[in-house]
Image (cartoon, rainbow, N blue to C red):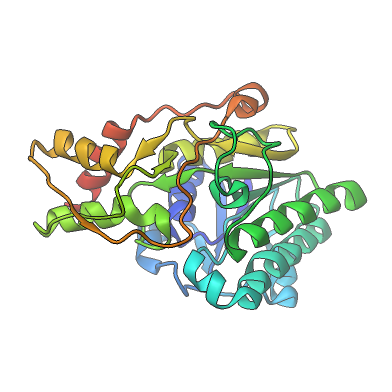
Amino acid sequence: MRSLVTGGAGFIGSNLVDALLGRGDEVTVIDDLSTGRRANLEPALGGGAELVRADIRDAEAMRGITERVAPEAVFHLGAQIDVRRSAADPAFDARVNVEGTINMLEAARAAGARRFVNSSTGGAIYGEGRTIPAPEDHLVAPEAPYGQSKFAAEGYCELFRRLHGVQAISLRYGNVYGPRQDPLGEAGVVAIFCGRLLERQRLTVFGDGLQTRDYVHVDDVVRANLAAAESEAAGALNIGTGVQTSVLDLVAALGRVTGADLEAEHAPERPGEVRHIALDASRARVELGWEAAVAVDEGLERTLASLR
């Protein structure tokens, strides 16, 4: 199958590219390398993947590349993911996450792509969890422009499905972690902790450390993307474990994995931080046949091994 991956030099995207190549796909990657790294794609480029350096905000370029490649599936992971930057420059965040998604939807429509898999976010769209684990019909209450822009992008996916027949689906991820993760945004806590452990530095916990998230391993997220591309499901589906894991839980798990007696130092809590969220992935189990398979301890062990 011919697959096109935007943001394919990033953390999740590059892991997805490896999986697509592994099953025999012809893979083209679009990435402007502003946050993605060419090094993440070195194995894939050696295996036949093509990297096109371009910006998803450039509609003409996106249409030209997509028409040339004629992909059967478009995996849209290109995005502005820094929550703090979204707050400082919400217009830039919207240009990348909303306009960029519109450009890719239009390019996919023009090229006749069979499937459009959009990467979205759960916690950043729902905000503070009123119901935990949160289902897809949870109140939408973003606490940063990033969550708002991703929710708007989902809306355009649905609009293109209704107006133009683009077979789009949006996957709302929990806090994804694993090999190649950059310490950007709050999900980067695993990457930060692992990096500090390898440098024999103490771990820093903001606030009391009891704030919880739904940590889902990148391998599970890749499987969800592959399943979504083969399905006929539409709308937004949560991709998470349904389990709340606190920051202190992460510290304890890293201690178990490394056999070390870890003691974190506490810093003042960060204002505006969501306290508790986890995602109900029941619909993904039913509609995609997917569920998370990697437990936190195993995921942390894999992540540490990739950094050594």
